[in-house]
Image (cartoon, rainbow, N blue to C red; front, top):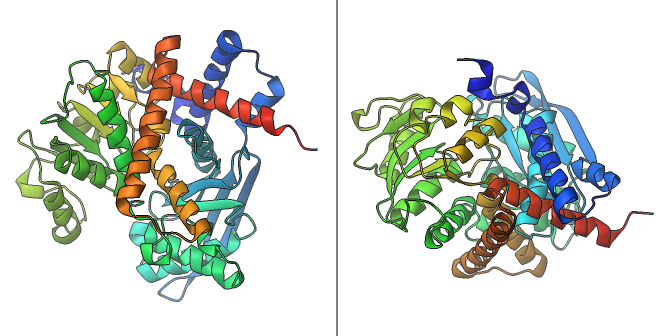
Length: 439
Ligand code: GLU
């Protein structure tokens, strides 16, 4: 199989180049079909406006000192604060963090949350570190990015490899340096609820995705899928987003989860899998902390899992997973992108040709940052909303975003990803116009 057939162009393996390509195509469309776009505004929007690289030491459990590299990239200041998660993974670098920050700007515009985009990360392998080492790393990283973050400047949140625990430590570190700051907890979202975290933040990315999927099904936008009841689902990735989407779709919508995979491989059972039981196996039974080996099911490769028969495919792992050679063999009717940037442009074209409906990442996974916004609002106001109130507001935001993107898609005859880009970028251009250029 040629490189082209597997991946498309080399550029497509680079998430930053890919998102810039999509951005430029959308700008071109706006320029010719909607209204002239000032060149300088395009350059400004391409961002980022700030990139911080930090190198710092962490004392390991065996008393040696290890040096880590961390990043915080702020993509656009359409609104302040800027907003985006922190990733701990071995492949974190400036390029990927910059792409993810760009992605944050776009998703905030799609879902109309008044934040600019940002992202952070540390190049490390959390699976190979002890809890105490990770805690020390988090505290030191928080200290190093201190000049960039703040409740009204830049607000981190969880991403791959981080969660409530890390957010609690970042809050504590910030608070120690700002003991008199009244709303210091707004420096970070995705905190534990007893430190000012919002009810519903943990499952928000998945629930937001489920709401968008539900709307698409209700409006009969997915060919051959008129109901979620008994629809079959394959989920790639069994971290926060992957676990919760599997749980929500099976428990609340009556779907049958037939395939699940994590970074070590996948399992498939056409009779359906018990999601909570699979999680229990991964966490408490499996030596490798994997779904592999569950109930004696045959282990599958990632590619086999992504191309297994199902109605709904949910990439919920990381970027650049659905490449051309995989897209060709995907059997799903709809793809719900809970990961950031899981599909290459070339693969996307194949999916369009195959008439597979794609709910793009900047729409499908924007529930996470939406509830982060709710958490930030609660912190600023000193409030704590009920879970039902959070979910009701999330539902409204997601349905409105879906309707806005669908309208562009229908009016302009664009597939959903292009429509989401056109919507987000047109909206961002308006914000820049209204703010003007300083000084
Ligand atoms: N890391 C998440 C994302 O990619 C969350 C961002 C946030 O809540 O600020 O959307």
